[in-house]
Amino acid sequence: MRILIAGAGKLGYKLAEAFSNQENSITVIDINEQALQRVHTNLDVLAVKGSAVQVELLQQASVKNADLFAAVTSSDEVNIVAAQLAKKLGCRQAAARVRNPEYAKQLDFLRTEMDIDYIVNPELETARYIAKYLLKGTLVYVESFADGRVGMLDFPVKNIPEWVGKKLREIGSFDAVLVAAVAREGEMIIPHGETSLMDGDTVYLFGKRDALQRFAASHFPPRDKRMAKSVMILGGGRSGYYLASRLRQNGAAVKIIERDEAQCQYLVENLPDVLVIHGDATDSDLLREENFAHMDALVTLTGSDEENLLLALLGKRQGIPMVVAKISRPNFIPIIEQLGVGRAVNPVLISAGEIIRFSQGGQVASLSLLLDGQAEVMEIVADEQTAVIGRSLSELGLPKGIIIGAIARGSDVIIPDGSAVIQPKDRVIVFCLNKDIPVLEQLFYRRKGGFSRGLWPGPKDSGKYTQD
Image (cartoon, rainbow, N blue to C red; front, side, top):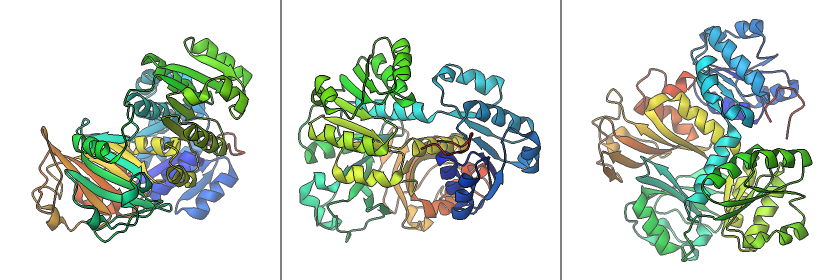
């Protein structure tokens, strides 16, 4: 399949990386030669220097034959125009990254009137992700699938000390819960009965939502389950703006500390019910004056991963119940988990997951990328024309990197074993390592050459239009 990506920044690189693992023809366009060199050196893609709003360049890149054009430069306006041009020149689908809050209320107009098939806003999606966590009132995070009936729970092994050093078979059986994966030192592994759990591991569980809730209640100490009523946000950029707005709509009291005076003025004008404080989030005296330690939740959204990590650690040590840190560099995420700080969110992975879900059409209802995209968790609506229908899981010969975590059938949820048979219209929750996605495509997707993902398929750089 032919895929064109405009922008070789973080999101563009992540998309190119994901698609280069499949049998796709990928072209990345950017005016920043250094960013293109990184893409060309590390990935099997074609790198083209130039502006994505140049019609001649798009024609030379055969945009009319492309299955997907993804515009993810650092400029909203360039992305909008480039995506519109791609569609006018014959591209089948076009997606654009649009981040400016001023455009947030006009997204429907952009889609319909400018013929852009999908618009992703990393900061808005990040804010939604964080708000969902803060407002549901639990410290054990559960990702929801199948309209909330199936969940995925992850936690550091050290939170259950008696598990450290034990093999999975020694821990015992789990009622309607499946141990799908273990993250260890930045690598995702598929465990078996003889796998010993280590202190720095993070465990991923799938199961019926009520079963996961029972598991959490029996293994974690009692805690205040009310939703966060008071939230401090350190960093008042786009993500901070979107998050504060959403939290206020749900009744939470919000404080934002932002060091840029002009941005503070913007926040004051557009968030009248939010307390905006002009200051340095790393100033311990300021934090103390603002009752930092008495917040229900802390969210660190500054432009520095190091600041976010250290401030989140400080918040955890001060006893703040819920702590969330924005981390742009994936190699920092395992550090967050090992320190037990709280939740780490990566806007690039969130956005990439949303674009992939869009590209897969109605057959994929939801999707999450884990550990820098090493694994995907997706909810697939089983089609009667695919290879999985009518055969038991044991007959499918699934590789170890593909785990069928649950099957939602009507009002029932099945935690399958080898004898389970997938039926048409089942909602199948699948854990899949990146290397095994081609096998998943062959089994679950009816389109030749891969699923809908195959159709397109599965700090600022120096260039003016490179994604930051």
